[in-house]
Structures are given as C-alpha cells and as structure tokens.
Image 1: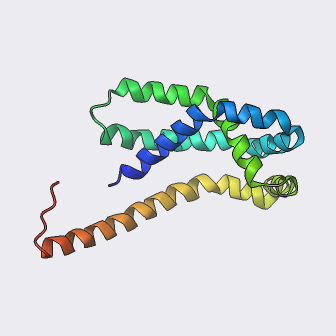
Image 2: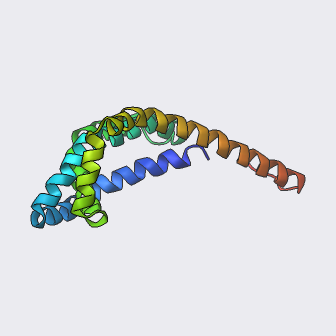
Length: 159
C-alpha cells in the first residue's frame, strides 16, 4: 500500500510530461500576455524543480516496490525527467490558462513575489515531505485496524 501513492505520483508526472506538449504549444500561441504571466508564476514557484524533486524522492520507493524493473530504467527515467523539465512546464501552461483569469494570475504572481509567498515557497518542500510521512503513518494505522478487523472476522490476508 505504501508504494501506491509514489507510483501514482511518478505516473502522473510522466503522463503530464509525455502528453501535454502539443496542447501547451497551441494554447500558448494565442494568449501571449496570459502565457507570459503563467510562465513567470511557474518560474517564481520553481514548479519544475518541485516536480523533479518529488520524482527523485519517490524513485527509491518505486525501485523497491517494483523489483522486476531494472535499475537502469529508473536511472534513465530520472535523467530524462531532469532533462525534459521544459516539456513539463509547457504542459502546465494550458492548465493554468483554463483555471485562472489574468487578474488572478497577476495576484498570484504578486503573492509569490511577496515575503509571505517566498516563505511559503521556501517551506513548501519540507511541509510536503512531512505531510507525506504523516499521511503514510495515518494510512498505516487505518490499514492495521482494517487488517485486525478482517482477521477477527476470519478473513486471511496474503502478505
């Protein structure tokens, strides 16, 4: 159960990187000012660094949870994720474009450039790491309780 979330994160990041470039290019061509704002937000928030960092953090669990996949795959996956960061950013442009209006993007950019916004950006990786750890412990407690209930009901769980 522990490798399910990291596997989902890596898969989601992979699908975003692999699938969104054409859509990003077509959306970017028609909305120059809005696209520029989005790219500024992605830059100031270090969006590519964050996703690559999340992938790098989850790959060890992926390796452990998928022993049949050769280490070389994971090594190359990390190299490609780092090298193709721009593709990921291009994939985010249409998402931000359809989610936010120009005024909202301007307000977001102003916030992220503020001292509070910078503090959020500085603390966010640590908050995310600790949140994941808290979530794993929480999920483990729930799983253990359900396992105990099922065992009391005579249901045998295969390890």
